[in-house]
Length: 98
Image: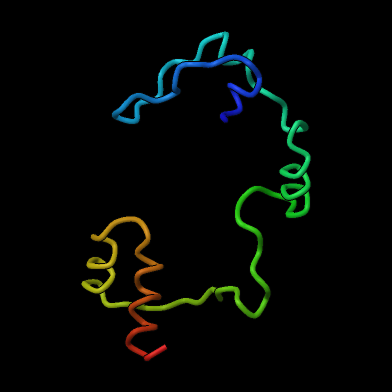
C-alpha cells in the first residue's frame, strides 16, 4: 500500500512513462508529511550529522593521493564519463591482482 493510499488520497504519479516529472499541484503539497513523521529516518540522519551514505570504518576509507597520469590515460578515463576515478581504482585493483 502506498503512503498516499494509506492516508486516503490517491494522487497522480509524479512522473510520466518517459520519466519526466509533472508540475506539482496544491493538492500534492497538501499531502506532504513532515520529516518528524518518520522518526527512524530522523534518527539515522541525525546520527550522521549530514545526508549521504553512512561513513565507513577508518580502515575501509579511501585515501586521498596525488597521482600523475599521462595525458592520454587521463583523457581515456574521462572520456568514459562520470565515475572515471572509480573505474581507475578498479583497473588498478585488477592490475595488482587485488
